[in-house]
Amino acid sequence: MAAKWKMAVTGALAGALIISATACGSSDNSSNGGNNTAGNASGGGANNGGQQQETVTFWSWVPTDIQSKKVIEEFEKQNPNIKVDYWRGEQSDFQKKLQVAIAAGEGPDLMGMQVGGMLNQYANTLEPIKPMADDKWGAGWEDQFVSSAIDQVKATDGTMVALPLNLTGQEFVLYNKAIFDKLGIKDVPKTYDEWTKVNATIKAAGIVPVAMGAKDTWHDVDMFVALSNQFAPGKIYEAEQGKAKFTDQAFVDTMKAWKKMFDEVFQDGALGLSTYPDARDQYFYSGKAAMFLTGSWHVGYALPGGEKAGSKIENDATGMFLLPQIGPNPSRAAASVDTALAISKESKHKDAAWKLLEFMTKGDGQQIMADFIQGSPAKKGIEVKTLDQFKFDSEKEAVKTVNEAIANAVGKRLLNYPELNNALGVALQNVAAGQKIEDALAEVQKASEGITR
Image 1 (cartoon, rainbow, N blue to C red):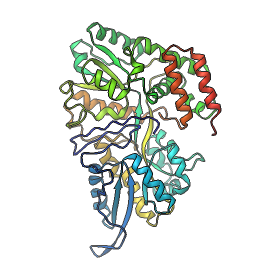
Image 2 (image 1 turned 90 degrees about the horizontal axis):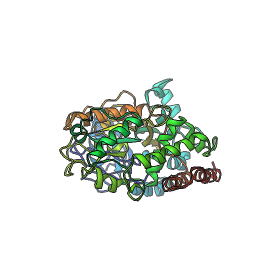
Image 3 (image 1 turned 30 degrees about the vertical axis):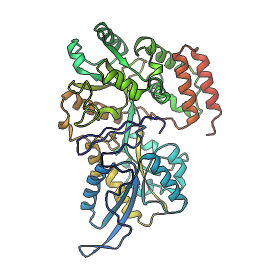
Image 4 (image 1 turned 45 degrees about the vertical axis):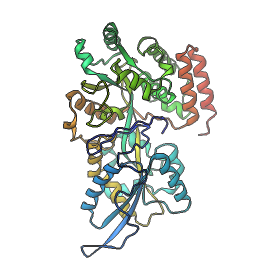
């Protein structure tokens, strides 16, 4: 994905994990980067209660090893005539293995996909999904999924070649409720004015209000996408496709808001700190900062055995809220599909692969993954049933807040073109450092015009 973050949270929820958005596949304690969780079956033909058993191969970085054990056990219980041969690797290993296998015509039946560049790279090798879904589920089935997720699993020619498993989103604020309570702050801020007033109270107590890691251009771009949707909802996606200019007033206003946050909200030295581990560990986990800007993937960090365990704030109640409204339009999350699933055109077990795809994206597998808090559900109406494992009510509420925000996302968080991401990230850092906004955006527009779309 566009962001370069590589945070892993190993939770006790039988190894519950939350992955970045980038959400680069994190591993469980049991992961060996290539474990076949479901066994080493290599083909159909096994006898199961007198019936022929078919094997479907599945490669991905998600679900993780512990997650896949529960997912596959339940799937095989519901489909006793299908055996799942699952191989899991970290994202880089998975992509290398997949590329070689696809080139040799030996790819898996079902595979994980990143939306955007990777999906388009393999689109012509993937089975079109919509005709199958229309046949199996009937007209209007798309309405059962988060709308922004369905839009992202289509190739550039509009063909749907995958289905979404889960999503991650930006921009969210992780906050220390114990600090808020101590200072008499009763409500999380919803507007920029409320935010600055809360920050003033926190700063007066000798605590850093907000920690931001602006050294990471991926996070800066995430913030720009989120902010721009407050000034002109959806226009960033038009500009991405060359249908609007980055020099337009909406983006000038977005850049002004970005600079204003540097001047009034972020901690000193934000440009020199990475999101992970710098801003997270040096400020928020150490208890020196009351808030930390991050993504939805962080919402499960407080599960037993997760990232919060062992930190200085381990016993503090924490929570998460959506970025406050600074623009004229309400604040809404921008969310991207973290993991999509696709069927190979060359598969000799398409019906079995479809059943597994259906189980993971629309069936009980979707609930299992949601309960592991592996991103936010792609299917509407899924509620996490494992919230009782959180110690504090505010942390339980955070999961609901995040999932609701992502279900109502204004659009995607990840832009498709690396050149655009790079140019925008540099411009954001330059503006924060004092460059004239109009000059910085002119450079972004120049990069946009150079993209072959």
